Image 1 (cartoon, rainbow, N blue to C red):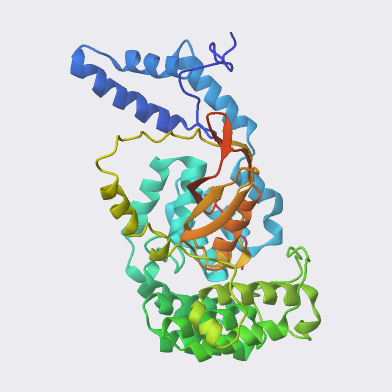
Image 2 (image 1 turned 180 degrees about the horizontal axis):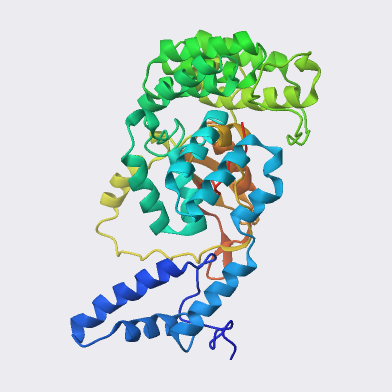
Length: 437
């Protein structure tokens, strides 16, 4: 066996997709603690050997050699950045930061990352952590983070933006105000400021931020869409409907692939020209109008003669009526009959639910939970939403559910309908560099 191939092609558990030596060493130390509960004379070498054998290798040395070889085969992030850093000042700054960390120069690294943050407000400390951990491991990140915490508050990197987990909206809002003061025509800063203020429920101030954005870019679809969402948050249904109708006026029913690199939903600077003539602008407007319609309460939509949303939520009326309990009492004296349990449907084909562009820009993550019927025809029907997500993700989950094909459940060999629950998780990839907004 060579150093770069496991002895056992079917190990007890496979290595992670991106194996990391530091994590393996931690695992070996944890295994040693467990082994010493039974044998106080257990050694680290014995724990390393046990870990290596679980992954299908005859020795720790061969496991380490294999992981190193796999790392060498992968294109490293620094190499990728060097290849195209000339195309983007953000990438140039990130590359400089990573190269400084590689040399152990954390002061220079932070200076580069601050430049990247100034150029792209979405580049936060949270993303720096992902980058550094991906490229160098947890140890380098801990050293860098310790250095950052030793700096004065004004010299530190902004920790999180308004769309990430446990966001610090107040810090984000302060940062974006500072960016706007320095670069008053940077459209993403106004957008992120509005989102951060809305996260603090400062709806009036958030509205002002989006209105300022519209002064720079009057036909900005995202600003109109977010103002519509703000109106719903304050139960200003007339305002939300007005924004829905405006988006409809900009839109056209289109099957256009929304991937034109020349059109940006959130441009960095004000645009010129007649955007309503751009087919991608009109197609995005149509999408956002639907997403806003999904958020308008059905009774409000009906009163204002708006189209009905295609999304149906689970309601208390879907629950069994009390008559079922009475029927059980009436039959209590009869001989109980054990219900037959149907077999589970066998999934033959499924697709992963795809992100919408607006959800990606807003860095929205979460889970959509659906109640569905696995029909005897092999198709998903009667889809109802138990828990949804805004910005079109509920629609994307429903679409993915409709693409599923399966062999239906059976009882005594006969196909039967079966209601079940499906969940679609939306998680942004842990890639180090997000696309510039």
